[in-house]
Image (tube, rainbow, N blue to C red; front, side):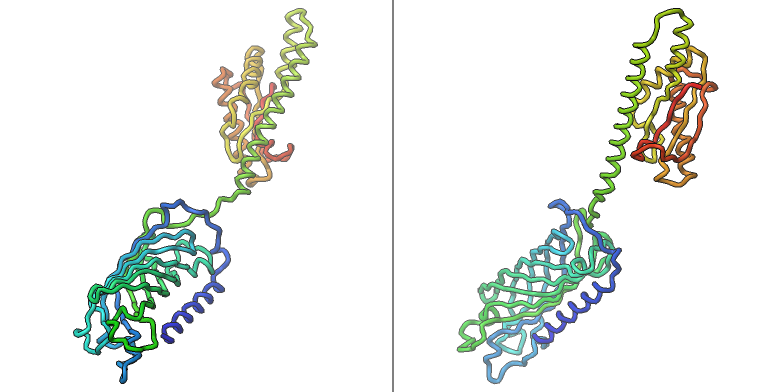
Length: 385
């Protein structure tokens, strides 16, 4: 018993040492998965050794060590469990021993019993709790506490059981691993021998130790995703909102200017009207883009562009399209290419509106910081030359 506790303590110390040696970048917060994620099933073969309270009352006693050959118990187990967080899980485990020992004699075949133990166990993954979650970690060690029900089929006896142990898993692939489970179990003092055999023994508990080797299978989604970068999402959304606000402000300013010109326009000769049209088409029209994109953010921007295109066609004038990028993001070379693509994107729309390609001049202004907020600089302007 003392040796087993020392093994558990040494394992805990080794994991604590690993926690100090892991680099900080391996740690990150994870998002909670759905109920149907992070389930696992396992199966394995066990070696067990029972040691009853009855033996402690014998004079002379049977050999004190619980690991004598005549105590060897072979069994098998199956389990199903779920990890609710990277560090906390629950497991339901059933173990059946084919040839347990009832501990009333040192002749194994004279005291053979068959029994089954079913327990609910709470698992604590020390690697993830102390070192942070790491998806590709090869070895995970999880101490556990359990409680359940033991049935001795040979003696027709039942017992409440408790346990603690170390559940080790070794990753083979995303969904398959090897498991090594070491456990110590406590049961009622009559479960491994007949009640009459105990006499007046002061001991009130029977014990059995077990070691298991088997396979564990992760079902469905078995990893944990990083928590979304909320600040980055907010920044991207805000930049898109800023671009829409600037677009609205430009359209309102342009509408106000056109209304003012119409109000002051004198309905006289055709030549006077022609001069008025040239003044109108000289006003720049802005078309906006999302960050790092050369696709026009909103087709509504093209409404004023179409009016300008019609005026340019009727007067045989050239149109200049100037593309811009936000100098706060990207290199100068990248922004130069991006501004060229934005200018060409608007030029292509002008061609669709009936403007001859040789009447359109594209200019790449590169990255600028003329407007505030910076998202307003992600644009192309259209003017009459």
